[in-house]
Image 1 (cartoon, one colour):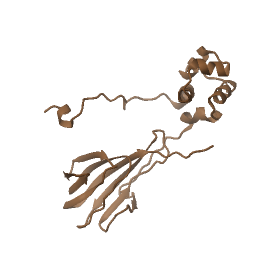
Image 2 (tube, rainbow, N blue to C red):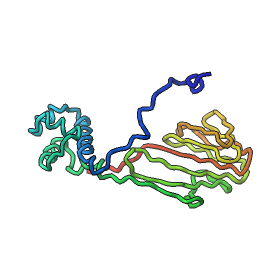
Image 3 (spheres, rainbow, N blue to C red):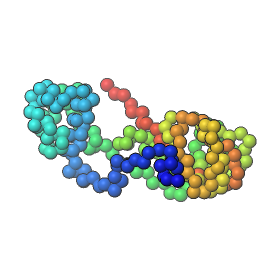
Length: 221
């Protein structure tokens, strides 16, 4: 059986190169400004020619700005942002955004209670970055199940979820499907369908759960 048949989908080539290294941030200011100008222009549905007419900046100059080939003056940026209807600081957003990292020592995750949590079900949050450049919020949990239970919590929420079994054995339900998960097994699914542990076969059971969903950015006037 081929991989395509196994996974029931056409083979695709990932467009992102995880090994690509960006230039140092100080050399990226022009690229960051150009990216934002192009993004705001396209959001308005106007062409480079339209923006040139609205600002008095030549088409050639605008193309160089959008491609990050030149460093525009503040006067030029002010004309552009006025025409685009955004504050001057908006074009520096991508350059100025922090890129955070969260390091959690073993056993130091934040224990939380999720809806339906019972005794013997421990959910340890391993990190959380609310606002980041990806537009996606990711919540990694280490889940430990140590006690038998006749009633299991059922979860249903937006986004995607990935499980990786570390210890023990659990029958996990997603929708109307059941999956027997043992160490090394993984499950990736649409979290909008009801899901949760159905049967605890071997305890203690531990698995990594990574939940991702779109960020909710605050709206400002």
